Length: 288
Image (cartoon, rainbow, N blue to C red; front, side, top):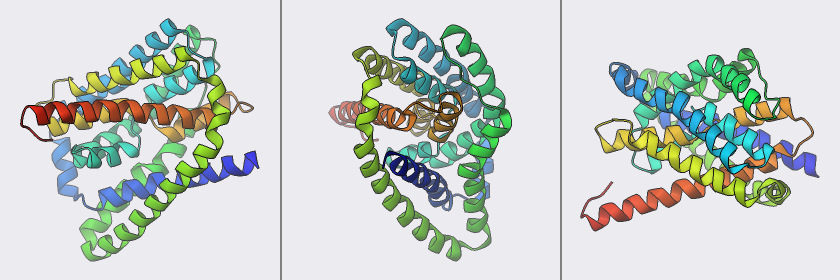
């Protein structure tokens, strides 16, 4: 039964990611996407925070707290592998800018095969971990879930807006149903992963995610929508890559269960700061 649940979650996750990207990117034109590339300073700032600052701060945080090694491995891979599909969904739901989120996700996914192996090598020297993955494995895992559905979404939007609208409704319904099923399946299986979550591990996650959010938000972007997008991008690691690296490095560990718990805690931290910011703005008479 355990193996069935794991496989079920993995299949749904691999279905949700491209569905989310296609659904959101079917509203983005090629002109919108190119407009983001014409402002490389934004991408550079987000890249420096996501690819350099966040991995370093996460590594230091988990070293200081002495967190469980399985949780540490998950958090480190998530920190060094930004470019998650759900950054698009979060940007849309939290009043960020989806075109910037889409351009940033694509750019980070292109860089990921080069940066992640380097970070894995460095962190394995600091922590007693055996994290490894090849650049080709990264690209084969990430591209079909992010870059390909983004390209298809923009393509159909340009070629046939009417067909794009129909496909958006289909994929939108797919990812909403799939998310519900993933959550339900994860809740059934998550207790097996709780064994790794000591108080030190939970505190390390809260500190690291909070730091990523603040570094992303205060990286020098002028508009609040851009700052929100940058904060979400910096704090959301690629879940599919987390599972890939974890399975390759520790094939016998309950990685899916532990990763699901990590995602839940991370989501709670993000929601806490989002609600806090929204209340602060309301108190000032402002809105997102």
